[in-house]
Figure 1 (cartoon, rainbow, N blue to C red):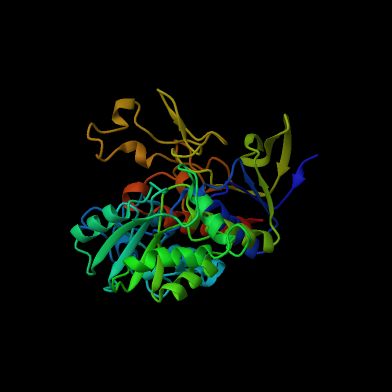
Figure 2 (tube, rainbow, N blue to C red; figure 1 turned 120 degrees about the vertical axis):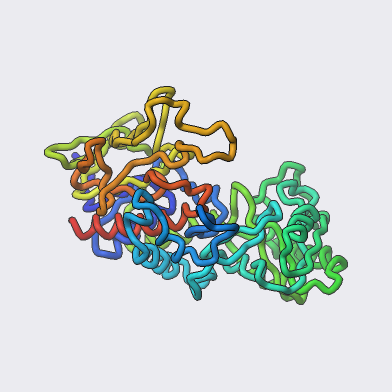
Length: 421
């Protein structure tokens, strides 16, 4: 017997979570199915709407204005600027004061672990004091056992890029002995546990190790390891001990800001009453008369049927498992939706490694209701919608638009699905 829901969302990334929250808030009984742990823990935790585009020399300051220049094939053109506003509004409501940037439609420039600046629309509150538009002097602090962040090199790159503030970098010993290959989560958990017998005074000891290097710096940037469950407390205590503003520099995966965001979104989805099934992939489906009836989930060697009236596909793109390819073709593997691509695989990419590669825009095409389309331009299924990077027509990595597209299309897909129930 099939497990019943009104809306099933397949995928646990930002697009899937947004779609599930939007549908649940509109009164639908929602079930989210995710084959694996959310990809958010591998992301920076920054919410990029539109950072770079053709005809723009450097980072885009007004992302919503620039979106209006995009071709009709882009997902933003499909859903419109209002959908971006709606997606961001949902995000702002869910994360509350944990994120900054909601006061303006303009991008902020956030320093990265490589010493570059990244245009982004929303950023964790713990990152806010590090924005590049701030002219206060900064000290970047790295740890000798955390090789992912070379603070002196990052500071040198920022200075060379012409940021409007003095910035220095220093590498110090972490006050507690850790393994040479310690992960970012290890540092975060140690700082979370400050106050226990083995870790008493760790945050104070860290501040004491930094204090001799301050030399008048107005703010101090650490790698993004300042706690996971007690992040706000770690920030507050370091700021009090140092007498300066403290901020985090976003890191690569695994990303503590991404983990914190994942936790908050799943908590919001759980609080609204949605069902969540993680760790079991959708491997097949049943459909009749142009509508999907049931998806089959692989669980313990058996195929468990899940039935719903509406479905949202948010399984990711080529980087994940939402779009797959072999030497001859490109396909969407769950519902076998059409993915447009050149017949000759040598036309999928350019010779230049940083060229305008076709494969970067592979994904399903949709109608205005985000229903995936066949090669002939008709909906694959009347009750299936797609959201996030499974969509084609845009290069989210080059544009820095992945989060914005996920929020906008996730909101539209979830809302439309709930309305159709």
